[in-house]
Figure 1 (spheres, rainbow, N blue to C red):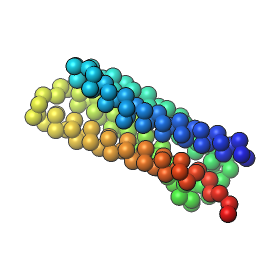
Figure 2: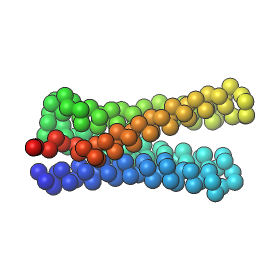
Figure 3: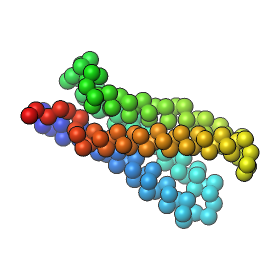
Figure 4: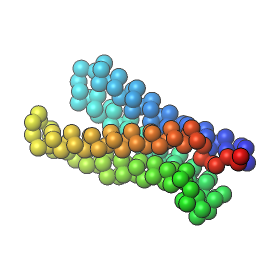
Length: 150
């Protein structure tokens, strides 16, 4: 039981750590050091895609581990709900927002255009979804994935 709890903490910390490392350290550095914003955006987009895949895999494993022990009761607890919400946010990002952003980029973005406004809106939504996922992950790291007795 203790090993399973530690494994869950490790996987959750890895997931949130990857998100923080890429989203709030690596991506901003790309835009700061590269003169070509298009290249920086392309590289950041590739990194975010990998982060979302990592999130789907680690989140899926965590959900399976917790469900294996808690069954349907997992979703009656706030911790299980938060974990499911995190996985849902990652899925929305990966399968809805990122393809929409890629489509806008492919049709071309010029300053002040409708595409530029659409890109800014989608980027803002994506950033908010990302931030919420990190915040929820930090809550689960702080309080733990399991209710501790006592």
